[in-house]
Image 1 (spheres, rainbow, N blue to C red):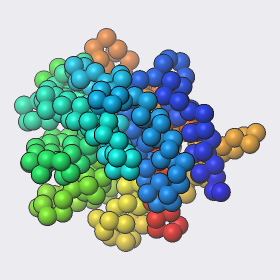
Image 2: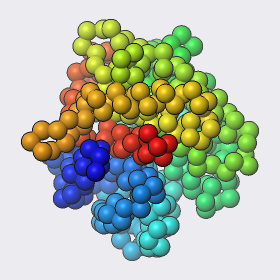
Image 3: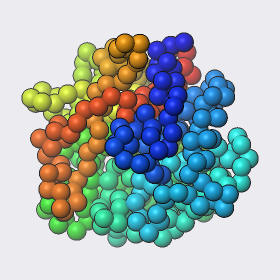
Image 4: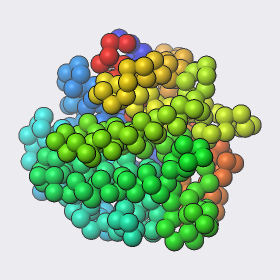
Length: 375
């Protein structure tokens, strides 16, 4: 068995919703419905689709099923908080329903979709990141919500809200992309009043590797999920995706192909090669080539980035494998947390941890793409 799968099995063996080995934050508090489980869940389902290892499906059915009753009510899901992160774990429900035929998963999909129907928006129509972050759009939220939204519309709603999804993606591209760096900013405040934003543009100051990674993964997953008959939309997403990829590739480390925590400042003291954003880039590159969204020449970049992560951060200690170099968490605000100001100093100050699902999940997604291309 490859060391990637040894690590994966070590993480899922003994993991429960109350105390998960792939959620570092969860070691200090009881867990609830959360986006990290959605990231790891997608990775497990991708691998199950490839190798049909029943262990992965059985684990996920038990793990995610713990949260959901027979009426589709979700333990820990609080619609009234309008937290866009809460939608992400809903992505795994589509395939869990397809594979298990358990009606509770189909009902839970509608439970989550109800949040989309009433989630607050900025004036352009883009969803707020959270109720506690009013009038703000974050790249993280594009990944958390829009692929789920696209899959629901494709499978269950006859593409009725495709234009809404399309407009939100175009707005992010037009509002948040920097012509100077060729990168999208981490976040945007429409009011331009948040303490962390530029008071003229509303943008956050810097480019965090994981936030750009969320954006890339959202775009390539949306392209994969959508109905290809809507070709004009797909063509727009392909253009935006390739521009974002090209923007990032300017800044990768030449030796490893990895991204730095603050993408465009590779030589600044304290910056470091970060696993989660790099894994997301590898996944996006490899999947982009496989889906013919990127030219074949991009394959070598994806392979280099993936192998760079393995060589630098996939280690073994006393018989236990671990994936290192993962930024635990980073965000902007809220108003009572002035430390999270979007500065370079802030991003490099957050803890660096092992095995957290925000890094290991995308890493296993990239591993699955390596398997699919036979590398």
